Amino acid sequence: TAGNYLLCVNGVDSGRSYDGTTWSAWSITGVASTALTQLLVWKRRVLAIEESTFKMWYLAADAISGAMTSFSFSGIFQRGGYLTALINWTVDGGSGVDDHLLAVTSEGEVALYKGTDPSTAANFALQGVYFIGKPVGTRFYTKKGGDVIFLTSSGVVSFTGFLQDAAQVEKAALSDRILPTLQSDILAYGATSGWEIHHYVEETLLIVQVPAGSVGSRYQWVQNTQTGAWSRLYMADAATFAILNRVLY
Image (cartoon, rainbow, N blue to C red; front, side):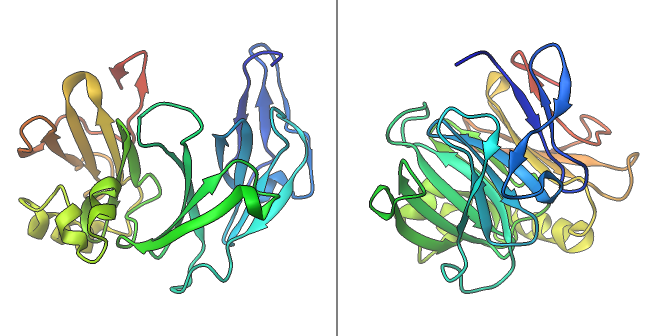
């Protein structure tokens, strides 16, 4: 309520906080900020993942520092691995009371939670656990309206489409037309850093970055989200992508 803040973690260095003018150490207790790998704002709370565990940590509502409380997903997932992403998912594409929390593991399981307060079982309930395919890279999801699109070993998968028929993940795949070639790319370069997926709404494009070796030999699979058509482009010899002020960099 006092302004806008930027919080940063990377799982190695101490967390940092920026208030628009000054950088400072992120002041939290309960867990070392050096162990945290991802941050998310959900239902007015800052959530974080503890690296290589099934633990989520969270602050009090509207807090940007202070005591963090843990919530463990161990026992929920059956395929092992560790927590790799927390995602705010909403059916209306906005931000409100219907926002659900998706907890995704390195082995491709997704737990869907509904509620407002992880400290109270009555207000934070598991709705289901799903297997969508093992995530490819660390930037393996993007928002598309009220949907979340995943880049996995099963292809490019719509979470909304997947929920309509969880028994057949291929029906939720948006990449069926290029799936054999995309899976060949994943087999060849899956361990290479640089995979990511972006929805660039201004140009109605879904962009999948393929790190075919080092920078200098990278290309993209790009889908026109209006027609569903795919192309392989050498649009940028990119290390990563970002969108700022509705422009793709």
